[in-house]
Image (tube, rainbow, N blue to C red; front, side, top):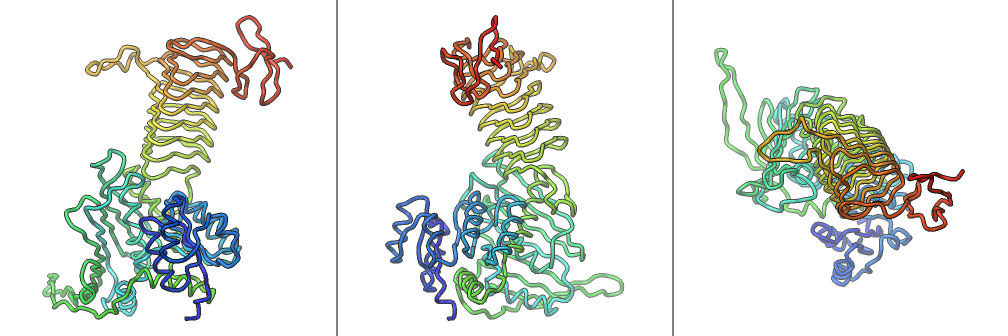
Length: 520
């Protein structure tokens, strides 16, 4: 083969990466392996007789022309970007990234660097799918009408992503390829049973401008494994059933509907099995990457194809959260903030540009979040809470109605806010909510508790585990239960010593009365 001189490194040697390592080795192209868990990398290195390198060493090795990325999805963008900038061709497993804007950036970068960018949508290399697509294109089933896919199993239940992001990318890739183009609208529904914040099942409905409809049903709570794509046309139907032996994977039903005296009448015909060559789709995919590098041709699943799939996933995730059908504008990167799946953002929220909301968080209606805020995992905010620009809310924090955070507030992991002083589970006391106001650049340590009705003065620092029961003056250092002042902190959050000089910024302070003032 004319690509045997191409050498690649596989980054990520775990659950799926080890299959890539094996296939590239069998193709004679494996030069090195890399994994954040050194023992796993070393195991693969010993098995296949190649060195285990750090990612930096991979990028610096001039003999390595291509990098194959099978790391966790949240690392895809960063690793792919670094590889492209290091003048490497890149094959990244699905999804291309977790953000549409990052996928767009990678596509642009690949074009500027004149490098191959390929996405691992494996089923686009399956002989059954390739034959199905070819026959649909030739008109074997007449006019294309609708498609549906089921990807079901009682298998690995993930905690880092929902079933939509875990199972659906391959099916969406196939459907977009056959339907030709992006859908006009997307509507997704789903249910959470194992984890209250992660959808175990989702049904995604796609409508295309040419009248074609499709849906994708995925679940990891299903009694048996099923991986099936059905394509229906006016003159027949195809079934790609990957659970069947090779002789039965691709089925053709020459069914059609005849109109008899104004009545639609099914005209059934016997199933025909289409002969296929028994081969490993992953090996075909790996060989396609090498061939694309050798011939400098765009891969079948290039970066732009991966971007189209990501746009549909992103729109489906928004539809799940907003519980409504999304139109064409949903496929543009119109949101200026990033929300990692799975999150729930209720209608009526105002979220500023550059803000990031991570896994399993819930933003309730009426909440306003400023620009460049960072909301950690498992955070609940709202309803009607105000969070200022550049605030950082760490994991496992709840901000209830009546809470206002000014700009630059830091809320440490698992810190606690309240909104009622004497709560009872069976007695509603919404009329007794007390507001809590946190002024700019306050730091609240991990596991601290802020009793409602207080005001935390600007630049104050609340120590880890402290319990604040009354107003806090600006710049004070508070610790203990109940919290008491033990010192002063500077604008930069540094504890002031006897010389009252900030060790970070050099600002000088003095105490005037009971307050701290900067000496100008």
